[in-house]
Length: 88
Image (cartoon, rainbow, N blue to C red; front, side, top):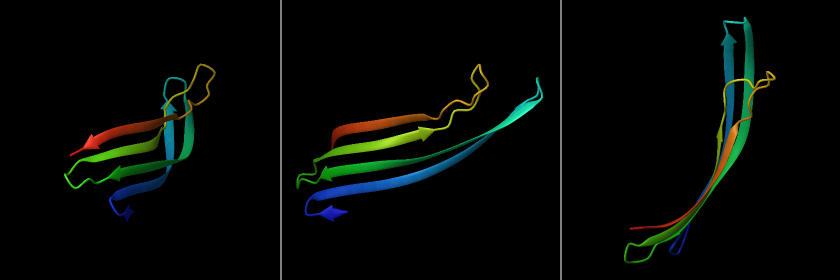
């Protein structure tokens, strides 16, 4: 989206994952299903000289395969990013 010299980026994402783990040593199999909705927002200002300060905020999601010692699936890894900078 644009308004005068401002530029905005908005995003939303929904991920699903299915991990199938086969344990040939003990003959056990398990499936792990994970789902997450993440978002992203970006904002920058375009100066006439080509310099553009910006801010970005984003979330991340990554499934983790495997089982804990008590045979429970690991929880997905989640992250968050805040970034400030200048582009030319």
